[in-house]
Length: 406
Image 1 (tube, helix red, strand yellow):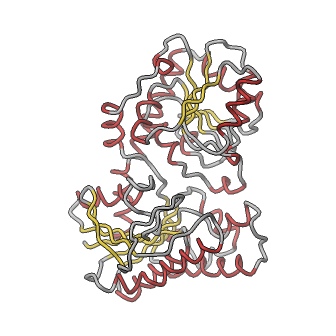
Image 2: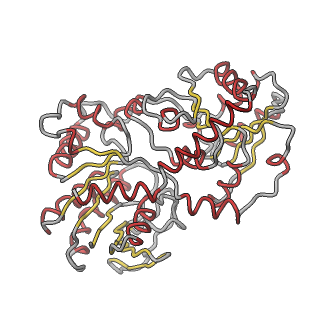
């Protein structure tokens, strides 16, 4: 079967660590299918553009995966230039796709919705199966984060486009388990039946994770100190991540064995490090940014990995944090410090959850895990390993293939 994966941001992972389509392609190809990923030439959250001349598109083969990169103008931030970039990709996509043999199936991803809609239109044109993959709820995210009100003309337009995608696609795949709750909230259940909606979260490529854990280690005595209980955070250190709450929680801890090791970088790191020094928070250490290939080793050295995030009303439909699945693959307990009824780590009994994320409650949960009997602790570790297998991209790709086959 010839399968196209259309995702605006899915450049090769060495440029941007959005590897979902790359993993799908890897395992679809192993199953004997021909796969092409269509993406924009711009690399999100960077100044890099992979086509700097007037070439309309270019082909790359990276780790055996065939990419078609469509030239789009660079953008900065989340303003008008980014919106124009989204529209440009959706506008140019059909012309480039016409240069390739007809596919048997198209999987088109939103965000952004414009390119997802373009992919569904192409599937209807070619008479092939069209799957809408929804990785981000637009325009609900715009409303939830206060960027625009629910009656804003742009929001109303995007809502109509969103509903059109769900109706016209042969199937809809959400990365959030509670996505049909969203369909019900919108009152769309008559036009979009539950049977049409599927759930395939993000996950982890266990084959790659285990290879990286063995071959890319970090020489850091804090990671191997047998006398400390290591609570590890990996990810961005920005204001939106509210890592100041973790510093507050660390100050509440009374167990001298516990130490927070924070791996990552961002525009708030310097200020938080200054807080650590000024307030003499001796049980928090900022380790800086590392390449993603070192994350498997780091998280596997943890006694507890913390899935920390600022609570959002969007979490009522589920979450799809990539780091959560790295934590599960590490085979260590997870602490989730935000309410979410569809947290896969909690549902599979691999994570404790702090529904009311105050410094005192987070500290109490950390203390609870640090004081666990070995049998109970090992059970959490075992559950994490089992959960990682369920969310291994090898298995997720089989689920996607079932949806493609209808």
